[in-house]
Image (cartoon, rainbow, N blue to C red; front, side, top):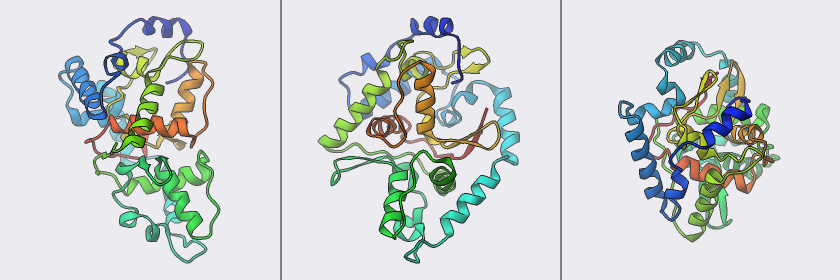
Length: 280
């Protein structure tokens, strides 16, 4: 979401069904099914699999432009750099494929996951850093687009076509999920907005020239390359959105954003991963 006028935001704030309040005491799967039902009722002509295209699903012209750009993406150089990083041996002589499940292929849809031993949510980026440390390397800074972002952009393409498959099992996992859900629906900042204000209540509404995307399907296509080769991760987007509503943002890799990504990703369960895509 780009910077938009306060007056427009406040007008949108008064609209909507406030799904967060409706689902306050629901479990994860009930939360997801309520959102799926909500959007099915709101957009009856939209197929479930189309939600992987986010706001593009509402705009045939924009989707056509996207299809054309994706034939020769302008950011292939970034993915080539990420592939080189992926294949370069670590200090131990092993590669990332040697220490990640299934050689790192078709696993991104399982992340974030709750690690019972650590008592916290672990993202795919955390798994990459675990691999680095175990093989004698320093961890990458989460949020650094030139290292973790570039490597992650390539690695996630190895899971394209996998269906999102987030698990919430056990008391610790449910607590982390609920924390992420609370962050998603809790209004904050000077404009008194939540993630749900835009991406549940007002999904499909146009702000200036942009359409607000629905939460279902959002988590499957990151990182995105915005306007060319500008890499933007999902947690970069969290930070940007919080700044736009004049809220004190967190930093990528922290517990709050990891829990938010955990909840957010669960809402896209069953949809196919399609990473490293173009967005305006």
